[in-house]
Image (cartoon, rainbow, N blue to C red):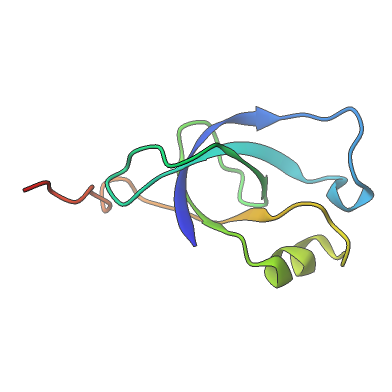
Length: 94
């Protein structure tokens, strides 16, 4: 699992049938200090997350396949929770 920040929504005029009805988000993964870590990921969302939300992500293939109800889905990432920013603070640098 990783944390990430929602940077926007994605739309598709054509997409895999397993993704019909799913909200697609673009999420920037974060390192332990809250800095961008790698490229943004395309994520399915069932929680109603919005821009700038801090989210918990999973890349567990079995969990994502179960969510969408298809064994051949091309999606890898899904939101698992929304983090309360007041309770999450970056590690203090020494």
